[in-house]
Amino acid sequence: MCTLCDFNAAKSEGFAEYLLDTLNHGAISLMVSVGHRTGLFDTMSTMEPATSDAIAQASGLNERYVREWLNTMVVGRIVEIGEASGLYWLPPEHAAFLTRANGADNFGVFAQYIPVLASVEDEIIHSFYNGGGVGYKNYSRFHQVMAEDSGLTVLSSLMSTILPLVPGMTDRLEQGISVLDIGCGSGKALNLLAETYPKSSFTGIDLCEEPLEVATKDAASKGLKNVQFKQKDLTNAVADEGYHFITAFDAIHDQARPDNVLQYIHDSLKEDGVFLMQDIDASEDVKNNMDHPMGPLLYTVSTMHCMTVSLAQGGMGLGTMWGTEKANRMLKEAGFSMIKENRLEHDPQNCYFVVTK
Image 1 (cartoon, rainbow, N blue to C red):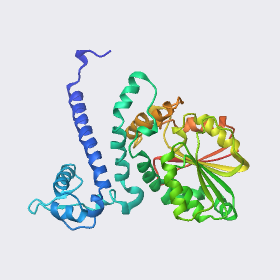
Image 2: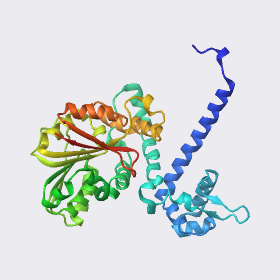
Image 3: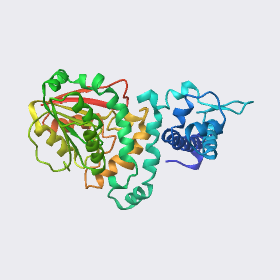
Image 4: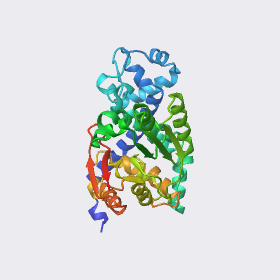
């Protein structure tokens, strides 16, 4: 039991400093998102040291706002400024983690989640008091940010790294098989597969209509005839005709009933079919996540999105950090017998499960 006699002044002061750092870093995350969305980091990475006016002109933005943003980045130790010249520049060592040219290393993409999640704070607080959840429709820009995130972790490495995790799958796709993607979102991965493997047929399913419209338009613009997208709630769905290959990229833990969806996937696979699931690489036990490099962010994403969108549908609310242990148990309960976990260097956030009957 804590008493005033046990009060550790040094510990208290250290904690206050930690909270101050947290506030500062939270503010910087918001401004990193702004820098990414406006293209300021991309523009500055190609420029020599310059005035705020020159940077604003090169970016096509308002100088006063650019100047204030630059000063935030300076005190945040992201942008540097000449002591005598007053010119701003983005060091190449920093640009390597803040520009679109650097693909999966671009932290600017992930910084966008902070304002997206903050936009539903009032609704989340309401749920703290009253239970229930916050539905997908309440999130501004979520599908756009998720598509960009997926583009880094999935799209960029789908052909070179992810598909080879499944032995012989590229050959089967070339010969012609049926493929289903669960939680396909904007369909970038599925449309890429459909374009690459014209002899195979592809179906994408998602709960939300908005990203499916984007997926359908993208497929039409590419003239793809071997891909279709369907809006469907899989909470209590009956198995479809057999698929040779089913994928789910960062989608299962969000479901209202992940157990039912995994059962649907098992029953919808042909006997020689394969299920490829990308999901969060963490433990179901918080004590094992103390040193997780993204632990605080992922638990926040869970509270503010993944858990609550499931609860909004009357679901299980597993959350982002459901854990690889629970994932394995639920896969086995669905009837899968062979489960192999894979970790990829480009994607430290996720585990790639290759699963067969």
